[in-house]
Length: 361
Ligand SMILES: [Zn+2]
Image 1: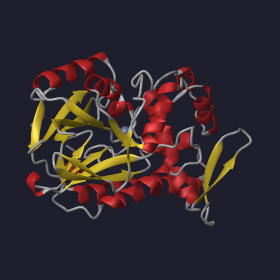
Image 2: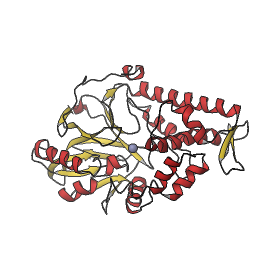
Image 3: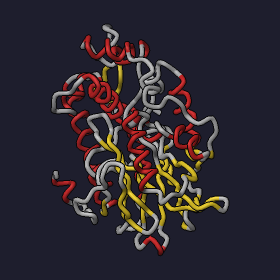
Image 4: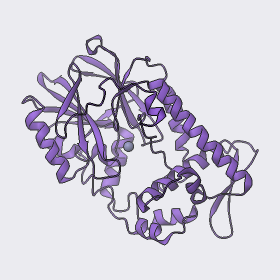
């Protein structure tokens, strides 16, 4: 554990649910852990005991990617963990493949509806239907604009086709819209939706402080993770975005929650210490922003120039694509604040230099 992880407390100690098994965290709230075929090797899903339209069953929060191994893990869960009851509805925190991939399969199998925000539903459906989502020649061009020169990275990005659809082949054709502040009645308890921006178009976290749960619970999705910092990237589809500012502003919405809230993150272990962790995340980004400003004071930097300053380890091609988006998210926040100005140089690359000007917008 790194020092910042040690500042949090983990009420379950080191216990983890077995693959395809679950652990009860509070009455009617169960933790499922599924393996992922990436560097980030697992995702947490949640089972909430529920009753809908007079039927007893489960509300499932998030789904895992659509891969044969994930379906196998779900088969074990369905056989052993659902107490013979059906899935009544599928809630998705957001549209990323590890969260939404198997929603179509679960919804069809149980004739259950998908509940998700409008922003993430539309983006997920679009991404699943289009070959060039998160890759293709336009994305490669965007990387060139931001200073990427490595042929291996550009070739892989340009050739990447149907990347999202390989993990999310379909998104259900109907959905129930989740809105910020909306209260869902799950198992007789009120769960409040808290929207968040910057990581996905319209991420939803779910908060409940029903006395029967013994302590307040926040299903934080990817907005607050205990060990890694949430990926915040500028993407080719929204090249002028300011996602890091949106993310930091969204964190403020969790500040009023009680200190003893048990946080259920999508990756890592359930923890207590929400405010401590938000402080760590704010400091993490403030440190990165200070490094970026200092570098741009010396000479103009492109996003690709920032990558090795921000990520002091060897990155593979896949990690490099995330790193460029993250570097750009930091540059854009400072550019929007007027602390950096950008210029497109004669070589066609966008570079950012320190400025004392007025905010960009
Ligand atoms: Zn995500």
